[in-house]
Image 1 (cartoon, helix red, strand yellow):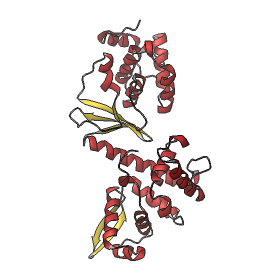
Image 2 (cartoon, rainbow, N blue to C red):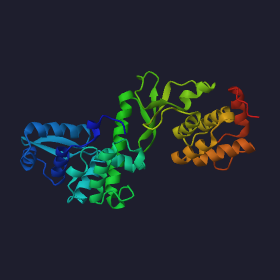
Image 3 (cartoon, one colour):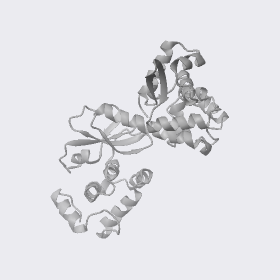
Image 4 (cartoon, rainbow, N blue to C red):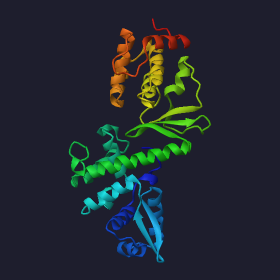
Length: 313
């Protein structure tokens, strides 16, 4: 997940405050005394937690109070802190721990972590000592509440990241740290790690489509969008749409002579659209629509191919 670290990571003071609130200590004056924290530092960290949509502050009978917010990730974090109230979360989730746990949740191998090895080793040792990370470097199923919080917390920041491009941005699909989004063509140019894809790059393959929106993939891993990626992303926009399946077929047929089949099938499996790709390949070979598929009839596809000057014979 690529956002400024201060936005989604925790410092020890933030976690200590959250633990106090989870125990029912809501009055700011009481939290200040319990943690021996200055009013300025308490206020600073409360504002950070509010930006994360984790807490809300209110004023009741002249006393300021703080409560967990009603966002899904806030509710899940409250559950986590309540269930495992014996764990010193301020020493577990602070610093780069959230980064490491998110990458662990997303299935990164050791060599794929974007963190210096010595730092990674130190954090993993700490997490393993508490039984949160297994010896196989995965999150212990016993801490399923942590996995649920991390997953929802990541979604929250991905949604927030999308809206930095356009307030009208819509996330169409999300998996781990990647997402597809639709934005108006008038949106500001996206920063690093956003790649135009799907129907938005079909014109690069002489398949022009008129649209008032653009489709982008956010990914820290991708350096470029291959035509095979675009085919898969078209399917992810609307998995049950015959229209988008037709677009994907047109692009697949257009690049057929230099298609990287192994890559297409491997990525289709990873993205969960392997069945759709198998149906498309069968369709192009037999000219018959597989049962229960969302593909067009062969005659409909042939007409569309003619419209776009795609040779299908």
